[in-house]
Length: 436
Image 1: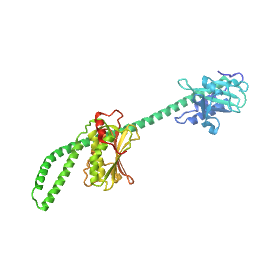
Image 2 (image 1 turned 60 degrees about the horizontal axis):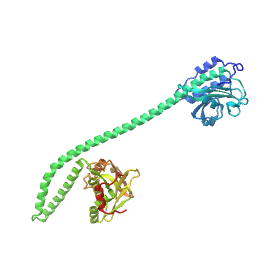
Image 3 (image 1 turned 45 degrees about the vertical axis):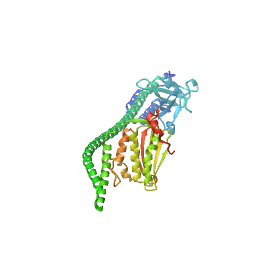
């Protein structure tokens, strides 16, 4: 489609056009400057007032990528194509010449102050029209087919540069995404490797500890029997005291050996749908009596609407007992240990929180679940390590925090169970009401 009249307009100097084309050299990433030289060359060769290179980013709209003259902020704007001469070039994918829009308004409107127009589509290698080279003149004038041919040569260069630019940007984005994925996979591999190394280390510790424990238990039982026998006899006061201390240390060793075996033993689970509210209420009864004997209290509150989780009953009670017992160690007389069952912000999780008024140094927080690490003089360093192994076996999460205002909080999160309660869970629900 064209209204070009070759008899009315002299041809462009072909040698000058070829020289201008040969001077164009596109460097990846320098699209704006390259397209600006194209627009300037077209205006100069056509002897026309203003030329622009446009990009049709969205249907019905285009944006000026380059201009033969400075148009300031106008280059950053997106323009509607409806009713303009440029719309016909993009919609039909054909060149268009308009000698005077005043006498040929059917072709559409021009920017204010211009009457003549020549437009050539920018086509990609697969034939898509992605924009135009548009030239505007203030006075009416005729355009020859030679004008269109020369402008088309520049349009081919512009379309190729734009296509290469966006391919380069797409490749950049792909490479960036690939680097992110590689970094993420590398991080995951390092984490997995660390976890495997830690598991192997713990397995070796567990195997060694289990072997030593069995070796020690037998002679320790013999020692206990001898101490019990001595305590039944008539001993001097000094001997009674020494035998009592020996018995106390023997019992402490028995506790340590039991904890070592609990840590070393593989965590095989027998999971059921249990009402954790009822289970906690039941398990806290003997712990509350122990707390009251030291003039401490347990404040239990259930703040979750859904309290059912798929857990191993005995293992869960072991987690609760260990956490509350640890909290007792940091709680003075007339103080309270807070136990809370609450829903996590993330759907599908339910959390057991145990708080005490103590404090833990920040440098020690990450080490509290390491085997045999303890901040207490009489601690074994296995209580929280056992808790973590049980929670990991449940595919849960363990978080420990310390705040000067609220004390220490240990939170054990378990996946909630939205299914019906099992018969075993129904039995536990009869344990009695809890504080809500």
